[in-house]
Length: 359
Image (cartoon, rainbow, N blue to C red; front, side, top):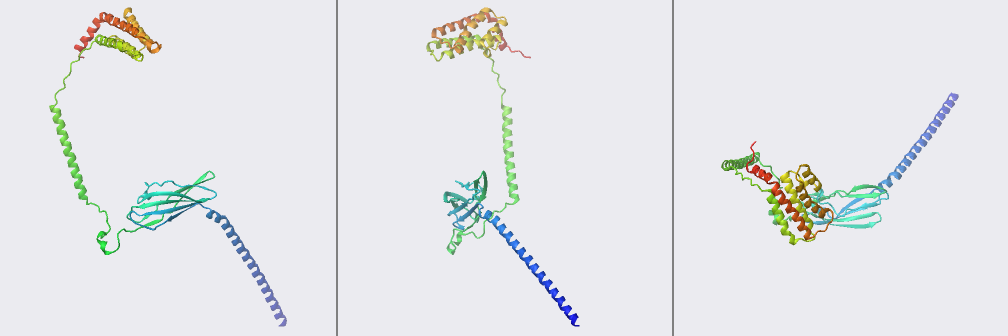
């Protein structure tokens, strides 16, 4: 019995020893796990805290939280930059056409430099709404290291306060209920549509009756007879006008004088001979006259006038009044020559106008 009890006591001691060692091992493992967790938390704080602290921020500081119609109030926007984006672009003016500025009007904008990386703008608003509103969100652009980012201000609520006092003396000025827009009944729009259609029909009928009556009463147009104007008479009148201008010629008017004199000859050649002389050079006109078989005397008279005109225009020749008189005399020789040579041709042209052909 004694031996058996001794053996049982030893066994119990061994079990207790093993349990103590196991507890010590678990305590050591738990302690190591706690240390690792604390270390990881510290690393996370060390990494994220600077990022959070160093982020660009825009703080909105209104001076009021309740406004009435016509009130003016200031809002300060404090902008803090960072080392990554050290520069900030503060808006000099705010666009009042956006939806956020529907009930607010910008009165003044001022800029202040507070610290090395901290700026602020002071905006004075005036309120013209009739209900609660939000301060518009304003974007501030940050620059640095060839990059940029935009941070928007918070939309701070502003509550509307009535301008009427709360006492009973002004109660009649307050509306009994909220003012709402009510939809018109459908038959009102139908009546308006019928009225518009009837009016348009009446206007159309009136215009149609006036036009149809005018078409019936309008007489047939009278065809004016075509009057033949002889190209020779036109040329002679042009030369007489040039002769009257001889006494008034100035150095700066010679070129125009010779151009008009040459164009008068070219117009006659084009009308009578069918040669488009006004679009040709002098050489082309003379060659066309020769190829069509016109007399050499006609070609010579034409050359005497056109070459002198080209000399003034292209050769920088300085003419005189006497020279202009000589060229005019050459043009009159041309008239005297074609007056004899083109008599039959001009008569045929006159008859063609007087008695047009009917195909």
